[in-house]
Image 1 (cartoon, rainbow, N blue to C red):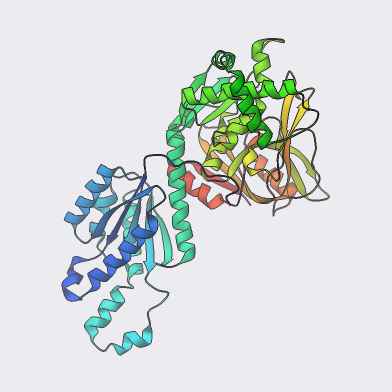
Image 2: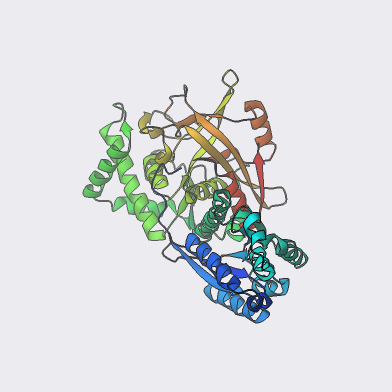
Length: 483
């Protein structure tokens, strides 16, 4: 699931808290048990580390004093998630002080050393002390209900992963949590530029930017079209030529595209690059029309190519000022799945698929084949004319995501997993693809629509619903999946 280069990691490492719990009474009773459990904890730390992740280990906590020390360490290091490894039975009084005041996601690792105790070897040990020590190394499940009870009664949200230390399914889920926390950090530090205004009358698109900041932490920067105009006027001929070369490398260019239109699009793309750099933007939602014949209209009708290039560079751009959907696109992109701006186009009941696409920018990094530039004599529903992108999303598994604003003003995430499939599409200079869902097109469209999303969604490659569910849990919003 890596069709294009992954987003650059934030220069500040993601700090993950890890600690194990045990019972100090055991150490003098059972020789070697503590060292064995610490070895397991060290192995987990090594597996969690790397790739821009700093593991902050609180060690094997076996007393209240040790627990308080770990709590101070985690707070000082500002960890963003805590993994609790239950290494053997432990008193809940040594767990709660570590977690109580942290207010970060907590994942309890109920991981045995192996799938089962070797009963024959165990019973052959003879020495009851050795037998008990061996059993205690497999005693993770004993403490799990106690820890869960105390967390529940203390109002601490937590998640449990059960398996073995080498369980691939368990480690897949652990990595999903790490990825979700990384995405939450990306959203928290993202700077979203809003330029222009909503498409007039598109009531479902209207949203509350304050809620986006409250839930995701996203910083909002309101942009003036005049700023883009001034930057565009400063673009040099050399910059236009370099951007045109990039355009020709990135797209298959229809012979219908004139040199004038290509240069116009390249100049606007250069201005967009400057705007993104100047304002330190990580995403943009925009819509503008401008008066007929104005410089602003000239800019906005030549903006699609630059927006598509930005989107492939992990700076997603959504048209029609769809703030909610550019948030969905940013989430998908941060997970490494892409995130292309889409809406329902038409249903094909014979093939039991639905066409989704959109005019304007597409995520060319997840295109099936090379995307094409085509000139449009008219932008449907919008003024002006210019170059547009025609592409389809890479064939294979896909995930749809919408950020939905509910009647009570809250946000929720709406997701569905499907498949991008080959077949005929509408060759109208738009992004569009064919999608199949397990429930069938009738149930899918009805089920999706009944959740009240806006008519836009973000499409990414791969099935990542479980990762998105974890993100929803981290930021504290509801997540609904259409099966």
